[in-house]
Image 1 (cartoon, helix red, strand yellow):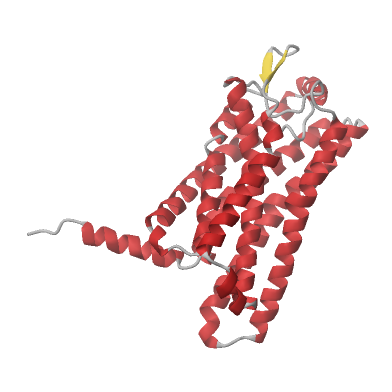
Image 2 (tube, rainbow, N blue to C red):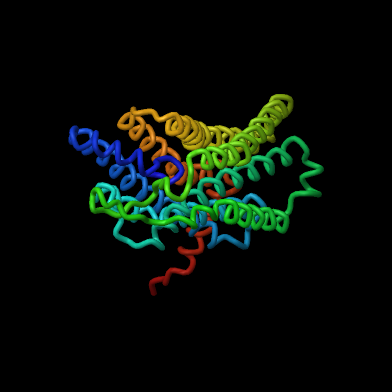
Length: 325
């Protein structure tokens, strides 16, 4: 499980329960494995395709294009670590890839999670300026500023999530296994993790989510006032973006942050409902990772001229194909 969520001493209690209930363990692992395999393949193909289109049409770049490109890169970096997680759960919680890859796999999850949140927030703010304040948009929004914003997001997230590189795999002598993605009591206290959780919850989820809600409320209000037919394409694109981004937040990000907070409080209070708790964690982790599946929908349905970029690539391919005599 995720290092933010499952302390090792509670994993031992869970293992004792699961030993007496093998069907629960099988169901738990099967759920995680199926979610990771199916979602991972879809995420990989969708983001590879999006990244291919965005790179091939880089000359047509806009500020929005820069954000989409960075979002696709963030998703792909995380997807590359999914096979390690899948093998870990297939082996019933036994890590075989060494300490380094354990650290990288755990780290990549949080980098992707919070890079996605901040990039989606920047995209939403950019759309807000374009629709609600078009004059300011011309002055403040540019490709250069978008690049610097992405650099700032990457640096901030890479630095603030770096504590997850400090602890890697550890042996579980009771089961003759090596554990990863778990919070070991001998190096991190639950109270310390609770503090870190609330910092991440506030600055990594609540504040960005409030910014997005405010931006979208003002966007919708502006679109309702300006219902001219000539703005229909821009309106539709903005509405599609609002729907997709809110779906990502409500399906992927919100359940994970709520469950993580509730679970850490349960751990701190010594709750013994471990099997049910683990199932919730499995589901919420899978939902959090599913943002990589949903992001390609954003590129295609809400991205600026993404379908036109596809048409450009197709025309280039046709024109470069050898003609018959």
